[in-house]
Each structure stands twice: as C-alpha cells, then as structure tokens.
Amino acid sequence: MKILLLIFLTSLIQNSSQVCRVRRPRPHIIVIMGDDMGHNDIGLRTNQIPTPNIDALGYNGVVLDRYYVQNACTPSRAAFLTGNYPIRSAMQGLPIVAGENRSLPLNMPLMPQHLKNLGYRTHIVGKWHLGSAYRSSTPTEKGFDSHFGYWNGFTGYYDYFTDFNSTAIEGFDLHDRFETERGYQGQYATRVFTERALDIIEGHNTTRPLFLLMTHLAAHAGRDGTELGVPNEVEAQRTYSYIQDPRRRLYAEIVAELDRSIGQVVRKLSERQMLENSIILFFSDNGAPTVGPYTNSGSNWPLRGIKLTNFEGGIRGTATIFSPLLKKRGYVNKELIHVSDWLPTFYAAAGGNLADLGPIDGVNQWPTLSLDTPSPRSEILVNINEQDNTTSIITDNGRFKLVTGAFEGGTYDGYFGDSGRSPDTPPYDPFAVLQSETNIAIQELTQTPITRQQIRVTRAQIDLSWCRNDSFRPPLNCSQPCLFDLENDPCETTNIIEENPEIAERLLRRIADFFEVLVPQGDSTIDPNANPQRYNNTWCTWLDDDWCVKTPNNTRLF
Ligand SMILES: *[C@@H]1O[C@H](CO)[C@@H](O)[C@H](O)[C@H]1NC(C)=O
Ligand SMILES: *[C@@H]1O[C@H](CO)[C@@H](O)[C@H](O)[C@H]1NC(C)=O
Ligand SMILES: *[C@@H]1O[C@H](CO)[C@@H](O)[C@H](O)[C@H]1NC(C)=O
Ligand SMILES: *[C@@H]1O[C@H](CO)[C@@H](O)[C@H](O)[C@H]1NC(C)=O
Ligand SMILES: *[C@@H]1O[C@H](CO)[C@@H](O)[C@H](O)[C@H]1NC(C)=O
Ligand SMILES: *[C@@H]1O[C@H](CO)[C@@H](O)[C@H](O)[C@H]1NC(C)=O
Ligand SMILES: *[C@@H]1O[C@H](CO)[C@@H](O)[C@H](O)[C@H]1NC(C)=O
Ligand SMILES: *[C@@H]1O[C@H](CO)[C@@H](O)[C@H](O)[C@H]1NC(C)=O
Image 1 (cartoon, helix red, strand yellow):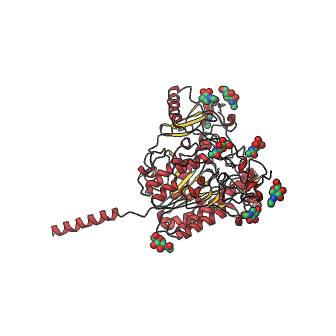
Image 2 (image 1 turned 30 degrees about the vertical axis):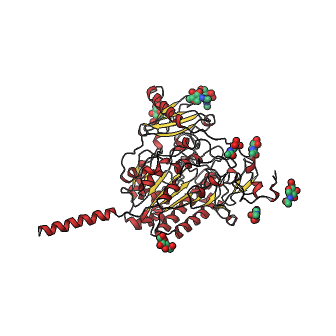
Image 3 (image 1 turned 135 degrees about the vertical axis):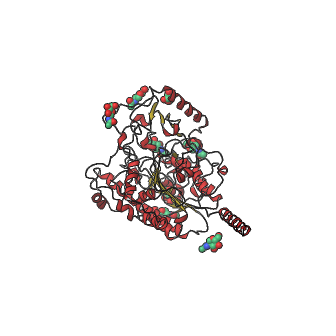
C-alpha cells in the first residue's frame, strides 16, 4: 500500500514538474504611447480629463508612480526601442525635425528585432520619429513587419500634412510601409490608427505572439505645430466648459479620444481570447509642452518644468500597465523604472534569455512589477546633452537629483499648467471607470472587481499636490548645478546643493562617467533636398529616393 502510494506520489510529482516545463505561449505585448501628454492629464491625477480606460488598466494592473521617460519624443522612443540611454544612440538632443538626416545607428538592434527572434509578429501604428532620410532608417527595415503611420514628429489630425522647415511648404505624411496612403484624408487620426490596430489584432494568427506598438499623434499639436484637432470642436468646447483655457478643452477631447481607442483595443483583444495572455502598457513619451513651440495646453502640475527640460515636469512619466500574468495587481508601484527598461522587461516576460540583448542600460523590471519587489535600478541618467550643456542624473534609489544647465536659458524651468482643481471641475467618476470597455473586458477575465475604496486609495497614493509650496519659491538658476531631494521635494522647489556638497560631487562624478561613453549628436541641419515639393508634395526617403514619386522633371518648385 505504502509503496503504491509512493509510486502514485512520485508520478504526480513527475507529471507536475513536466507541466511546469511545458512552455507557456509567449505573451502578446501591446504598447500604447501617448504623445506630449502631461503628468496632470489623466483621470488618475485630475478630474478635468476623463480617461476611464487608462485608469482601468492601472486599477486592474499597476499604476507606475516613479516612472521616468526622456524629455522629448525622439530620445524617449530611442530609449524605449533600444533599451539604452539616448547618449548611446546619439539621440540625446532635440527631436529630429522633418528634413534632418539623423537616424538611429544601423548596428543597434531594436525591440521588434529582438522580439522577432522569439517568434513575434511586430507592428507599429502611428508615429516613427527616429529618422526617415533613408529607407534603411524606417520602421519596416528596423524589425517591424508593418508600419502604418507617419515618419516625422507630428502631422495633421485630418490632412496628414507635415510642414517643412516651419514654412508653408508641406508634405503629406501617411504611409503604409512605403505606400502613400491618401485615402484617409479627412478622417480623424486617432480613429484611423485605432481601426488599423483593430485590423491587426483581428487578422493576427494567435498561434504566434503579437507585438503591437501604437504611437499615437494624440495629444501632440498637429499640422503646423498648432492644430489641436478634434472630431467636434463645438461639442468639445461645451463638454469641457469647466476648463478655463479653450485650447485645453480641445486637448481634453484629444486625450478622451485616445482613451476610447484603448477601450476598443482591449475589447478586441478580449474578443479574440488574447487578453488572457497579454501585457498592455500605456505611457506618454514625455511631459507636456504647456507653453512655447508646439504647445498643446497639457499640464504637468504640480511638477516643475515642461517637455524638453530635465525637471520632473519633463520626465516624470504617466504610465499604467495591465496583464493577467502580473502576480500582484491593483496597486501603485513606487519603484524607480525607466523607459529603457521595457525591452529587457518584455523580453524576460516573454521567456527570452536576457544575455541575448547584450550590454544595455535597461534592466528587467518584470519582477518589480509582478511582485512589487525593489527595483534593480538605483539610478537613472536623465540625460547629457553635450550641445546645450545640460545634464541631469537621479541616484540613491530615486532620492537625489542633480540638474546642470538650462534649456533655452531657463525659460521653461518654472511652474506651468492647470492644476485642474478649480471648484467648477466635476468630481472624479468611478462609475465611468467601472463601465469602461477596458474594465469590463478585464473583469470578465480576472473576476476581481475593483472597488471605490481602491480607486480612492490609488489616487491618494499618487497625489503630489502637497509638494508645491507656492508661498516659498526661491528663484532657481541651475546654470550652476542644482541638487534636489526628490523624496521630500518632488516639485524641486529647493536647491540643497550648498548643504550637501559631497553628494553633489558624487553625482557630478557619475555624470562624468557617462560622458566618457557618450556618442556625440549628429548634424541637425535641415537638408534642402528633403523638400517635399520635389516628391509630389509628399515626404519621402530623399537620400534613397529611387522608389519615390518625383514631381514632374524633379524641379524644385521653391
Ligand atoms: C496559424 O498558424 C499556424 C502555425 O503556423 C498554422 O498552422 C495555421 O494554419 C494558421 N492559421 C491561420 C488561420 O492562418
Ligand atoms: C512653505 O515654505 C515656507 C518657507 O520655507 C514655510 O514657512 C511654510 O511652512 C511652507 N508651507 C507649506 C505648506 O509647506
Ligand atoms: C543664471 O546665471 C547665469 C550666470 O551664472 C546667467 O548668465 C544667467 O543669465 C542666469 N539665468 C537666469 C534665468 O537668471
Ligand atoms: C557647462 O556646464 C558646466 C556646469 O554647469 C559649467 O561649469 C560649464 O562652464 C558649462 N560649459 C559651457 C561651455 O557652457
Ligand atoms: C547629413 O546632413 C549633414 C548636414 O547637412 C551633412 O553634413 C551630412 O553629410 C549628411 N549625412 C549624410 C549621411 O547624408
Ligand atoms: C530653414 O529656414 C531657415 C530660417 O528661415 C533658413 O535660414 C534655412 O535656409 C532654411 N533651410 C532650408 C533647408 O530650407
Ligand atoms: C501626386 O499627388 C496627388 C495628390 O496631390 C495624387 O493624386 C497623385 O496620384 C500623386 N501622383 C503619383 C504619381 O502618385
Ligand atoms: C519642368 O520644369 C519647368 C520649370 O523649371 C517647367 O516650366 C516645365 O513645365 C516642367 N516640365 C514638365 C514636363 O513638367
């Protein structure tokens, strides 16, 4: 009898260990990137802008509280796709302007290339912004099976025109791989991109893992850098009449449209039974440009600075992530996470061997997110821009931050943006979250309802309104280095360098270490040959243009 029992138990153990060894199919990875959305521009932080779907990802998954991105589009996307600080890909400077020949280094493999090695199908829908002077710098030559979208930094919400050198000369920029796609003109970009994403999910053969990157135009300023395109302007003005700035009302609707898109994507994943094995990440590439060029009236309140500055308003990102594969869910993660970490994080979650990625700056945060264990990362090189002499680093597990130099003489280093706390603002609507497509689809799967109490606690845990001391705001000039204690002063109100010279010394030395490995930025001159007037008023890969449609007799029309 005992022997029989032993045999039985042994076989049970063997069976179960066998079960463990059977590899789970690799998870689908869906990343939705907003453009120029500020810290104070999602429902989790402000009652002004309803984002029930983005919020639902967080309440059912994880809300990231100490998530850092780069201060602008091109460097952030470079860090995301390469798993490296932008100083290694020469992308640490200003975003690529349409007509520049800069691009990612050809020898640096990107996230889609790594994921393809694990069997993924890889798609990008929306913006590229990592170079398009040559065919070889565009997405489908860099590991993506398909790209539907635009190559430059922004485009028109309805007409898909992008201007050349800030002039009235414009080029059409909506492509399906290398085909020009004029058929969508007059249709709203967020919806067009969403339709394409839904088609990709619908057509995906689920025996293979999917990597879908949606890089939205929303909420960047559109055509000529000022358009805030919404489907119905009158309605937007009415819906958000409690917001003072009429442009911010349009901005709110742009964000709300983006949020609806996320609901549709999650529902489609659910319909195709892919949600149960998906990782869905939302984040904004950088802080909002509240004022200045390309302003969209987004807000990083209460943080200091805006897009293109190294202050928290430029780099402390918004992000929520949901996956049923996360062991701990429904909480706020306060660990230090950087945009370069997603490559190793996804690669590990997909069962890949991290050694395949070679030496990179990013670290695997999957256990950090799934188990809420301490981040393996104790510091973030915020950036070194050797051209405008600005640097910044965060160290000591997120406690101290050094900032040197100022972008544009410090014009954007102050406090900007709507607090969203005017008494006219309606209260947060938990019901909208519960009723969102995202929440309904996820609840069907997890059967773990989110509660009003949880919503309250989550929002309180990420609330930073306490950090802004308006009665005490000493003038700040970081042309000489500034040091901040982010734990006690996330609003960077007080430079503590005089009291802490040895800490500053240590951080300056770290920056000097990184300076050693910095790859200098390339020339950012706009090439007159890029002029879309030469290519039938369309953006084309002008330094590699055999295939481009040329304006009759290729004359320059200007
Ligand atoms: C999906 O892929 C599998 C394996 O590659 C193949 O056998 C199957 O026919 C494909 N299904 C469809 C609908 O194409
Ligand atoms: C703001 O700073 C001043 C000066 O340091 C201090 O006296 C005051 O208590 C602070 N207020 C708050 C709300 O922290
Ligand atoms: C900051 O200080 C430097 C000199 O240290 C000066 O050249 C610059 O004008 C100052 N900037 C502002 C905004 O006061
Ligand atoms: C660059 O910044 C450092 C630190 O703030 C300063 O000492 C140095 O003079 C600056 N160099 C230039 C060329 O502006
Ligand atoms: C890129 O543009 C710069 C500035 O116009 C020029 O000096 C450089 O030769 C160009 N590089 C290539 C590879 O075309
Ligand atoms: C871009 O505009 C600037 C300023 O108007 C001008 O100096 C420059 O020559 C232009 N570049 C091209 C390539 O058109
Ligand atoms: C050139 O652009 C026009 C739209 O402006 C389009 O109708 C036409 O088909 C394009 N020509 C070619 C050869 O693609
Ligand atoms: C070629 O360009 C010239 C302008 O330089 C123009 O007058 C002529 O009509 C063009 N020819 C054709 C065939 O488009």
